[in-house]
Image (cartoon, rainbow, N blue to C red):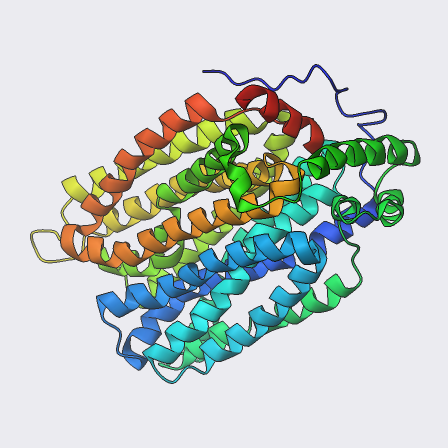
Amino acid sequence: MERELYISTNTASGPNSATRTEPFVKIIALVATLGGLLFGYDTGVVSGALLFMRDDLQLTPFTTGLVTSSLLFGAAFGALLAGHFADALGRRKIIISLAFIFAHGAIGSAFAPDVISMIASRLFLGIAVGGAAATVPVYIAEIAPANKRGQLVTLQELMIVSGQLLAYVSNATFNEIWGGEHTWRWMIAISTVPAVLLWLGMIFMPESPRWHVMRGNSQQARKVLEKTRAADDVEWELEEIEETIEENRQQGKGRLRDLRTPWLRKVFLLGIGIAAIQQLTGVNTIMYYAPTMLTATGLSNDAALFATIANGVISVLMTLIGIWMIGKIGRRPLVLVGQMGCTACLFFIAAVCFFMPEYYPAGDVNLLRAYLVLAGMLMFLCFQQGALSPVTWLLLSEIFPARMRGICMGGAVFALWMANFAISMAFPLLLAAFGLAGAFLTFAVIGIGGSMFVLRTIPETKGRSLEQVEHYFHELYK
């Protein structure tokens, strides 16, 4: 069913909606999305580190899953906490606090003497990863003009995949230069540098104007808008924000029990669905376990680490293309193309693994099979990172009402990370039990259901202010 966004009670985006975003907004987005860079690096670095950590910490398939997924479990609760405190303390203060956790979590992981210490450190680090995932897109969405919101919010996804690429390059470089079983410690420790830069940068950034209005400080909100909007747009946007937040204020402060209201509950469940389908493609099995999967197809450690860099390069390039397409095409078509494309690629990888033998009759490794699996991964990432992932974070930052935005975003990202945790924990066990063919076939079948969800529920929000999107859902679901 086609879902068109139409609001009869509001203008499209106010006067001068096509005005070019002020340079200051871009600086704010760039600094804030250092949280996305850390998100990407800390989730991606484990893919190469596992090859060396396996012997150093004596990992089994079960503890391998625990080390990988412990960060994701922590991220789920980090998203909940950040979502709650972002409404109470402000988005900016939360991001500054997360930078501190990023740095200390990385140091703790790098110096972990055993498996238990590693799992505990990555749980702590996960709080920052999940908090950044829940807070940074909301912060940027609230501070960006409506006509540039799509490109600026999806900068978060670009920084995530750039962080993963940086992790893959770092893994291969450390292995090439130093090698040895302790190399993984340096791979992890280097992420303290962007954490410090995030902390320093956010000290000088402004708070969200919408948060200022929520706290009854319209004068501060006007000052932020004057720095981030064309002069003619400041008053009408401030008035729109004040009117919407006053409507929300009359209903009281946003609380969990408000989700009993039918339209709020439906929007919240839509957000959970959007978050879940992004993970149920199995994307992070590729991002976290690519070297492990490629060594399972017969490649050496060195070859697998080098080949994984291609995953990162494709992710960055396709995310750039996706950001450009969001401004031209819109949200709904990209989600649909991304979901269906990912599902087709998963069937392709499963078919290659099932029908092609791992070894030739003479006993040599079937390298064609290994490279076809890699090609399938790269095609998958074209659809995932070029369409599905950028729009996921953008939609989550847009669809929730102002007074419930922190709580709902935290809950949706909690669901995203719990799905990520479950998949990452289960994948080594699926791989051991059913091989690559069975694991990827499982995700492909799930992807069919995800495609049906997209067709039936995803709206188009392009070119609308956050207040107009809120009014739309209120009318649709009341």
